[in-house]
Length: 111
Image 1 (tube, rainbow, N blue to C red):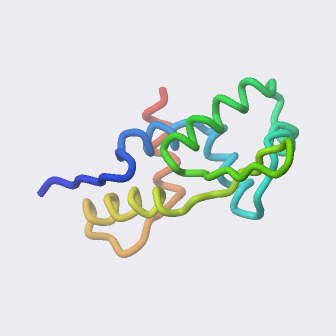
Image 2: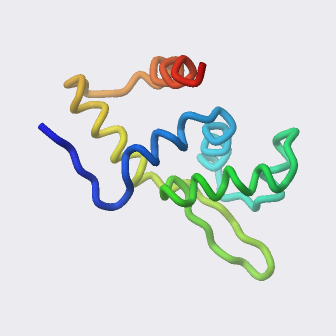
Image 3: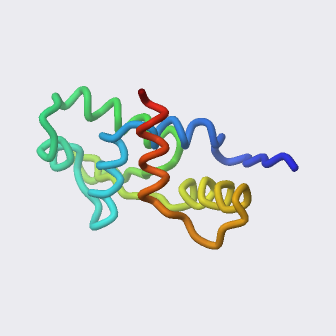
């Protein structure tokens, strides 16, 4: 059985999720929408670095953005995460995902 998702390629989603900074950005956005400067203040990285992470997350539709005057506000977008979740659950026949195990797997793949 082969899975195809037209909206966003799963490879892009999993690439975006493979980075701990991007996963942390998603965690921050779970609580509320944030401006890039607010996100950047949570890290010891430069604003251009955070902007590249935001672009990666935006490109695979894990986050969305809304322009408000001169600023852009970012929000989590669950649809792409749902695609990945469905794919993982289908592989294992599981009814739920153990996110701790998934994070460990992603970390081990980065090494």
